[in-house]
Length: 212
Image 1 (cartoon, rainbow, N blue to C red):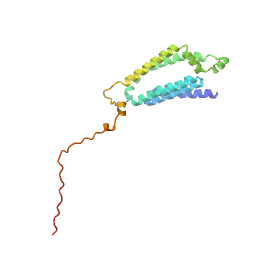
Image 2: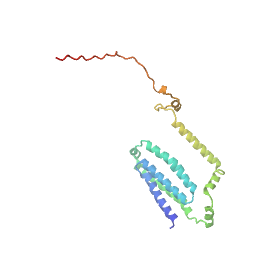
Image 3: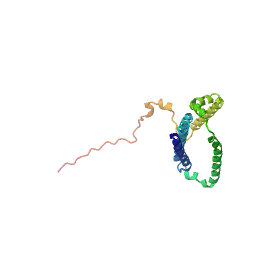
Image 4: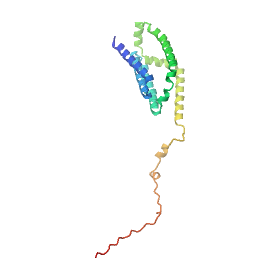
């Protein structure tokens, strides 16, 4: 066993443990953190397979953007965990059957690929190819239309999210930044002169009694 194989088993073990904790953690925040750890271990496995572009993309997109967004949403929402667990064991048998079927289908598809013996010449040729460069050529030539459609869909989704967030709400307090910048010192405080409600009472001088 070489170093690469040992690291593969270590990363795989941590990935399986973190993925298991994602679905068994009682706290949603802890589940999101375990999912971040799962993504990191998957990125390390991609790095061992010399797929650097996929590894960096997994870290930047899923860990750096999507999971951070999920984590902040989960932390800001007041989630009642007890209500979410109602009916868990009732639907567990059906979920277990679906999970086993999915696992068998994935095993049937992937096990055929593990039986293929790689040609040493093909492996040496693949090692000399820059996968990020080849992937960029493929995206911007053969799959250019699909890439533009996906970009347009993401742009529409981003604009819709911003529009839903900035909609006018009656219970929100909004102050225009332009009004704050143009404010003057005289606008902040006004001195009002008012007449006294009662007349001032003159102080009474104390008269000392003569000593005997």
